Image 1 (cartoon, rainbow, N blue to C red):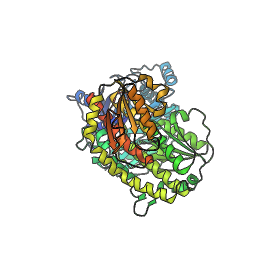
Image 2 (cartoon, rainbow, N blue to C red):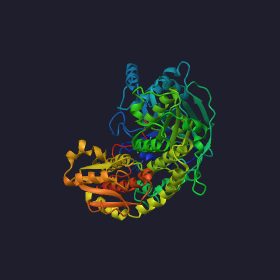
Image 3 (cartoon, rainbow, N blue to C red):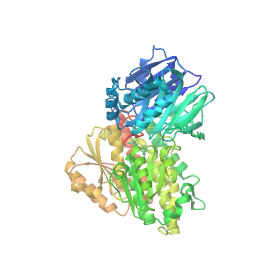
Image 4 (tube, helix red, strand yellow):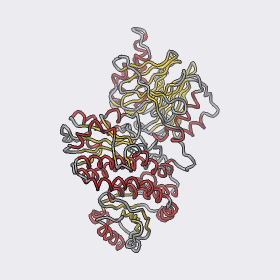
Length: 615
Ligand code: G6P
């Protein structure tokens, strides 16, 4: 949540900041602001999108080779011009941008008020700007604090999370960045530095980056970059080379990132199993699990922690692990897990799933599990993110950057990784026979091509979507492996089209949701051929008896349901355990088309953010 970008070098900062903010807008789009420095500093900010900020700055002085920008997802204070970042300290000495939450803001504010500080906004960030200034000015006549020392003193008082960029009026050639909990990446160019919440604003200029660690404070000026921690101990900057290409973060002719990402799923899945799964030799090896594989094989219990769509992938994982490995598996919302005194035994395997690798609740749950002696591994999409760095093993999903706020290709890539994990553990601990394993290798290998076939039917899916775009409520039903897909389908619809949608295990329908069904209610039923097929056919009849509108996702060639449902969308036949990878695709497309029909902002749905770095 919130995107941060900073620049210090020889170019005009404004262009870099605006372009960078547009790339980071998926992290929040309640307001945008920039500060540019050239002897003094100028601040421009407004409620709304980066494009609104651009309009505001049209006739303004936008010179400056140092600057920073922010795109906000509101936490403290409504999305208003006043609450937009950047925030100045009361005496104008400091201007800062912030991603995160200052938890003890009330106490800090009260202390500053006693010192005569007044506040213009309702944000926790302004409190921090004033706290830094307080330390800077208080000591100026005594021991003379540098801006860096003032920042360090202030941050020692702070409870919460922050990614910060700070400018000081008295040091116009210097920029300070600090991190705890919220991500910050520094790009290193020739005599220039870029700071951002993730690498997307940076890759156009350099592929050398440093990922700041918690408690790092970086000072950048004409002399270069110096890195120390909160205790003032110098830190060695580890420079990484990133391989992200610019084309990966552009729309490439698609109307929206979400649609592009839906269409990228065959590639995302192939990239995720490439080099790990060998179709010819029926060999599967996940290098990132090598150091814990013996523990995985002998595990007594697996706990999966995640949020949002990643949690739905985790639910599919539960079915996969229990079926293929016979290891008891539980799935928890990270936010519940971290606060409910969970029982974690030494040697339990904890799998944290996260597209961004930065979700605050998931990170906190990881910490808790580590302290309790669990073996904690990650399934993440973003290399260099916090979760892969906080876990001792893991498997990356090679889905490529996901920019649409509604997750699509990350989900299928996560399910692909979990399938491969369950398969390799299952083969090793005899949960699967060699024949079953071989069959699954063949099936998984064929999935991308089958998704391509579904994507070829997008016109038909669009026609069905047109028919139900005016609905106000909807129900998604599935059984077994397809129950998590029902949840994911409902989430996709509600988050981008604002139609109320509920996902339910099909058999549970009669314990409540059936009361909602009438001729206006679309009921999307996941009904591919498997052992519970007859049961789902009965569920469809129950809905039809109440005049509900059935949209059924069925296996190619199914005639039984075709005769009962209002609309059917066919998907190719697959092993039942892999059906989530196929059946979720028409649901993603339906949500997309419905949201477009309703005139919604598909890539930036209201109130949401892609990377949730606050609780
Ligand atoms: C937000 C996003 C979702 C995502 C969830 C978890 O709510 O909008 O798309 O599933 O966070 O994020 P993570 O990065 O941990 O997978």
